[in-house]
Image 1 (cartoon, rainbow, N blue to C red):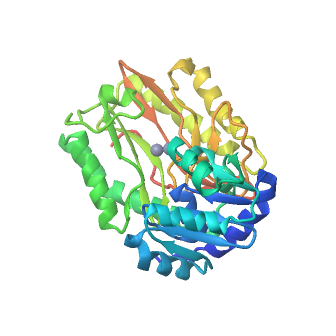
Image 2: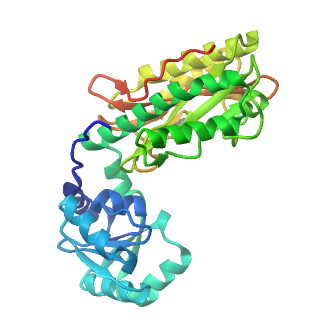
Image 3: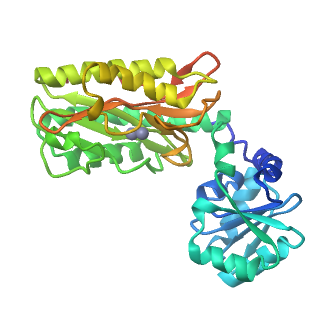
Length: 366
Ligand code: ZN
Ligand code: ZN
């Protein structure tokens, strides 16, 4: 694996603090593990993080005593760390937030039960504020280290697909091909797959999120392969559609339309462009071909620590693309009697437009 530039984690909490007052609170309790990882470098499976204007407190349990100190230290993040059972962690959070009148919670990442405990027992006396997307807004614009990790994940995935692709012609099942892709990505250095790998052939391809089955891939069928790798916590996402031998004419037509749609979407990506415009660029091409009703999902999504994150590339999206955002462009056409075609690249928004991070060649026939 190529050497990756260092992640710039230590500047993130200071940027979060600048956002606190705009969010109507003077402290934020971060309960999303992805957001905690982004802010501190901590990768454990249980933690809470409290950021006040002058304090940062990570609470976790004894399993992560050594790991939490190591990871925050490596990231250059200065924080107090409280190790203990849930009651001890909550007591520490309450003490650290003393004097904060308005404590923000991440509305999308707090259970009803936890919200009640925090309100009644931990931050009694403070006003709890429901916040939405505060840390996620920071995550929309990637730094060079983040882009490098996504790009490396994409490179591993491309290499894995090149190795596995000949299996399609051997009559292997969807599940065997998916497993081989996952195995190859791991062998090449990926920590894990970016999400559950999709290999969907024939009629299964008409279901955009089909699970790999025991169905062998047949000749002349459309096969949708949607997958990605994870490198140091960052994910890639790519879809290619293939046919073993010549596809029937409708399949070829579907492929041509989706390829043109995807190219139009990628061409529309640039800083300052409304994400909804990118969606429209893709959708117009498919609508012109008469398949508007068969494009069953939105055009794309942000990618990073999570496989689906901001900004959304959808008809109803209110997001505007910014330089160094990383998004997917993935239109598709799904016809139950013919199967599915989807083509997806992960791209990083650059000054003049965008640069694809996924690079596997686009060709229907193998
Ligand atoms: Zn995908
Ligand atoms: Zn995707």
